[in-house]
Structures are given as structure tokens and as C-alpha cells.
Length: 249
Length: 237
Image 1: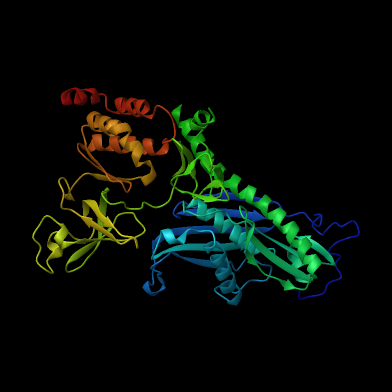
Image 2: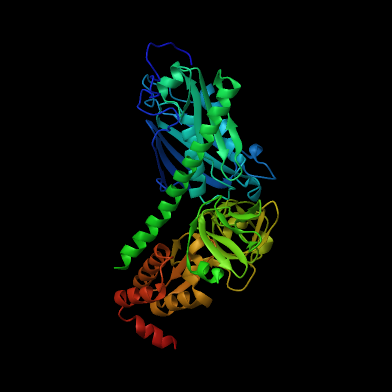
């Protein structure tokens, strides 16, 4: 949204610079249970984004003053690796990562049954290994898979996807160029069973009609992401039973 | 008719999956109801019992329940209590009034110190998940010697088997003393070689929880490793 470019982001045929149509999302790959020492974990790729997420707990909440006697708290840490972007990112917490951590933990609080674990804390660590726009959506999508993998009771998974506007076209799942040189970026996360929105931000400008159209695309795409999440979780356990079958021989 | 068919499938469900219509079934463990549909809360295996549909979780932490026997490891020693790790999200304090010895105030570390392993019973868990454990019951004591095996607490029921058949077979065939804690810890004591075999057998049970005729396979495994195992079994009879 910041810069200007001579690049044609969407051509006359409605094809974007990476060859996608306006309502096409990037390819997603999700794998659950990749880390041995975490309670639950997930590795996710969407386009050129690569995200690793680990969940620990529920465990005793430290420091003590953060404990809530009625429910568990969700502590999330979103972190970008120094090598995740083209220019080296200065390592450590910054305003952006604090914001995203808060957003993700609040989005997940809407689905996790925190009241079952009073005084405990559920810790989520999201590491962005490679970034190409849409990492907060990728991080949230990965975090909800990791939570389910950890066996934490939750109402539903949370798929997230962005819509936006570039070159005057409403687009789904912006990539880096479209995000940098486009007119708007709207990340959204939903609860698929009820179609509740648990995360919605807008950076840039869109008309009401454009936003409605973008949200329609995003809802449809989020349900597709949800199917990929479910398949990843189910695959983790069918893999285990397959291994069991092998060891019988 | 439909119910009977459904019973046989061991379907994996993830949070949010629709299990059944609320008009046909009642919501069981790890489920919730939304708009007349029963949905899963956790990842696990769909399970029907009569008209109740529930989910058997495949992971997650052990949640202590009053009356459970568990194996705890001492974390910290206070002047009038010990803090134990029982594999739950919360620490479990053991008060001096709940041990079978007469302990003077501040004299706690003479009886149990950090790293000691004890057999316990969960005395009480209140609504804010504050746990109390006790050692004042028959068979509860400090563990010395033997080996501690840790498996997922969801697989403990398989180690015990239907009305204790699996654990009885393990005990008979390996001639070991075995104590199974509901929190996923299993203590085995006996001849070093036999303990090794018993521990390995438990690992097999953990890895193959979901396969059929598991006890036959475990039996064959122990029989191969310990050819003299049948002798033990006969002695016991």
C-alpha cells in the first residue's frame, strides 16, 4: 500500500503477476505434528510463506500475576526470522509482532475452551521462516492446527485468508507485490461452523461494494483452507495407524 | 440399524466436525451442541455408546479425577508439604497430614526429597482445578528400585486391558511387579532382563493401541523374548 510501481499487477485478462486469477488463492500445504517435544505443532506453506508453529500446554501459568482463576490464558508469540524477508529483518520483538501476537491469541480465544483449564496458560509460538505477505493469516491457520494437534478442546478450527485490492481489482490472497503496491489488504479469519468472524483488519481503502465482494471470496476460500486443515490433522493419525499396520509384519 | 453400522467404523474426527443429529443422540464426552448438531471438541476417535456419541481423545494432558491412582515425582519440598509433578497441567501438593508417617514441621525432606517417586491417590480436585493428593491408602508408598515407563495417558486403558487381562498377562509372563498410574506412568520392578521385556511390551502396546488382537501379539512377543515365560505363568497358577 505504500509504494508506487510501473508493474502491471493484474493484466487485461484478469491474470495476476504470479499467474493466478483474481479469485484464486495460493497453494497451501499443511503438516501437523512436526515437532517432537511440543504438545502440538504444525508446518504450513502458502505460496512462498513458510510458517512453523508450536503449542505447549495447557501448563501452569507463569508469571503468577497473569493467571486467570476462571479460565486459561492464551499466550502467543509471533516472530519473524531475520532471513524471512528480502532485506534482513532486525531480530526480536517489534510493534508489528506484538500486534499480530495479540490478534492471533484473541482470535483463538474465541474457539478454545479456556474455561476447562483455570489458572493455566496455553503457549503458542509462531515462527515465520519465509514471508511473502499474509503471514498473520498463515500463522493463525497454523496455530489452530497445532492447537488441535495438542489435543486442546476447541469449538472449531480457525482458517484465515486475506482479500484486498490492487490495480483497481478485488483480489484474493494478496502476494507481496500486490500488498506493497496495491490499494487495500483485508486479512480475515472465521469459525467455519458458524461463519463468525474472529479477525478482520483493513489496511487501505475499498468501497463498500468492493469489501463485500472481497469478503464473499474470502469466506469461500477460508472454507477451502479449513478442508486442508482437517485433512492435515486426519492424515497425521492415519499415518500412525499405517505404521502400526507395518510393524505387525 | 444405522446405529449398529456406525459402531464398527473407527472414524477420526477433528474439532468442529459434525458427529450426529442432536435429535438422534445425546452429546457425550468432548462434544458440544450447536444448532441441533453434535460436534467434536477435540481431535480423536468417534465413539458411540447406546444413544450417547462422544470422542475418545488422541492426545492432550492428563486431567486428574478424584480417586485416580497416579505416580508422582517430587518437584519441591516445603516445610509442611511436597510439590509433585503428576503429568497434569497443574502441580499437586502433598500435605504432611496425607502421608503415612508422623512428620515434624520442617522435617519433610527426611522422608521424601526432590526426585523421589511415589504412588499416590488423587484425593480431591475442585472446580478451580486445585489438586490434593494422598498417600494414606493401602498400597501407596514411596517407590524404590525398578523402572518407570511413561506413555500417553490415553493409552493406559489398553495397557490394563478388558477387566485387567492385559496387565495380568504382563505380570504373569514377565514375573514383574507392575503398577499402572492413570496419568500415563507405569512402574515395573523385577529381574533386570524381565523388566526390559515388560517395558518393551508396554511400548508395543502404546504404539499399536488401535490394532486388533493386540494381546495375542504382545503374548507372542514376550514368549519369543523370554522362552521361560510360561514357567512363571505356571508357577502363578
